[in-house]
Length: 251
Image (cartoon, rainbow, N blue to C red):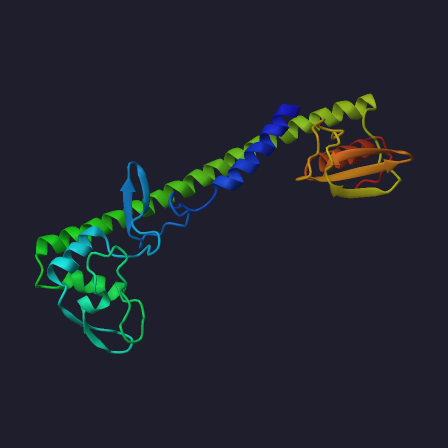
């Protein structure tokens, strides 16, 4: 019984950690469908973690090989410029794509030009566009699989919690019958505080500082419970048992 409840709490902590968005294994930032991504072995990660939506390798081939001197206008301020004015160094990996005048990011406009420019080979434009669309679909599939895994993990956690609760409920019933737990609500004060390592009277597991502890004080003694589950199950069992014996009014 004790090991079952402990495993349930351990699984809860693990699921809380795992139920997160898909992240880049290099920068640990979320991965979105519009990001420019690459594979390193079997790992999917940002092509450039500093600029997640920067141009891909195929798009850089179009820019530096065919559209480097083409003219375009900033959609925000109307300033006209040639693409090479965005960065004087075509071999620099982190090429800025900001308007020379208003400094707005033009990555979307540059990408739109690369895909539509009739002066670059159509086969290269199609390959670059297909590569980006395929990567976007892959990211969406990964995110959907992650979501499905989170749902399945949540359902598994719920099932384990229910099973553990039933085990604790049966143990409480046995202890109540044997006199190992208070059979009526204790008239003394009830305290709630962070766990201090005391053993829970119901599940017999230590109550760590990460869990809330409820202490029923009766005279010089106290009975400690895990506040989140064991105390509620004891309170439920005591109320049902007391009503059956006519000690408490029916609710």
